Length: 265
Figure 1 (cartoon, rainbow, N blue to C red):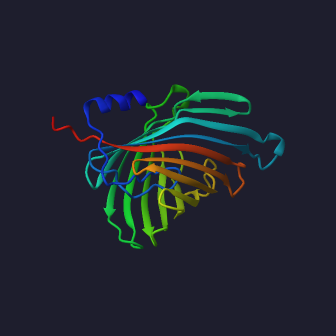
Figure 2: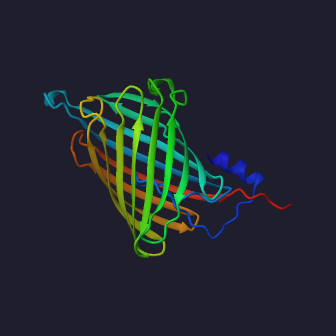
Figure 3: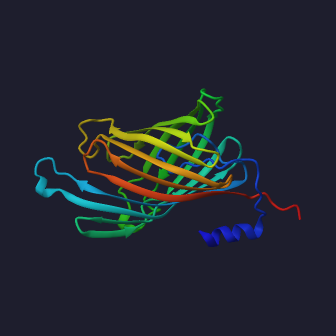
């Protein structure tokens, strides 16, 4: 990724504008805000999650697992004031019942489109659509079919220091019933550079009889720190409230925004 950024800067001048960095990490809730036109935004992270897949009939068959996502990356490009293109990938090292698997799950190809410009408590609203084709994955992590995710994202700004965002959507594939996803995140400004959030998110199946999908509810929280209006670091942690799989997580990351405006020379 450093090489890619270097190549970009060889052809374009990186200019700082008045726009502030608004990221889709570290919380699960996607923001409704669009990356400025002719800008690239990179959001990188490293996360570690662990827990136990519980057997409801016989606890002796419970399975421990852990997942390390290395250099998770979301690349966002602003086409205009209404639309951005998105590419995401998450190299993963996972261990289940003592067996280690390393690879790349399906990369996400997506688009975000703003529907409504908010004003204070009246929310800004956008829709997101992401496809996860099996071909864009290492062989050991290819799903049987492509997976598609759709979300509506909204954000309400109540005061200078408090805002609330939420998402609602669905994950769709041809081998399971649709899985509805939701999240609610409350963000607080600590000062001009630092912020924090607390969030609840989860999923539930459209068909309660589908044994492949279960109800889950999670809670996470974290902090952000903006070194400049164009560079931000973050820290987050979370756990599962429903305690189905005894899930815990920890993550760190950083994000930055660059302009691709061509030099007049």
